[in-house]
Length: 120
Image 1 (cartoon, rainbow, N blue to C red):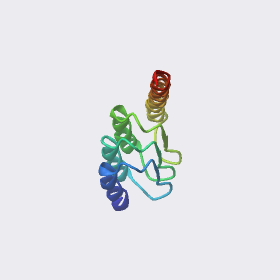
Image 2: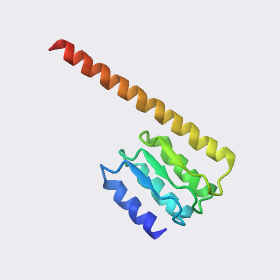
Image 3: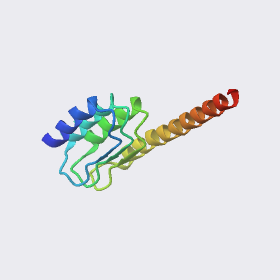
Image 4: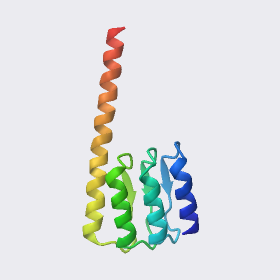
């Protein structure tokens, strides 16, 4: 968890990392909670792999809370942990919302670029 916590501190100020692959690193709820806190302010990470760690509902709840305010994360892998089906569904629901928001943002940006090009 010390490594996950250190990474979380770095992610709070990092604006380039898009993927965090932390699969099978013995991360527990403490590490997941630290990462969740970082995701509340990070706006570049799009994918997090926390599969096959030691995360339970407590850590997954922290991640779900972070996803309520973070709309850039579109993929979180939590398979191989001790997380309830209901909580997994909550995380997946929040991720689908983020995916839809990203798609809408991309469409809006594309339309703005097209309009700008037509005006030239």
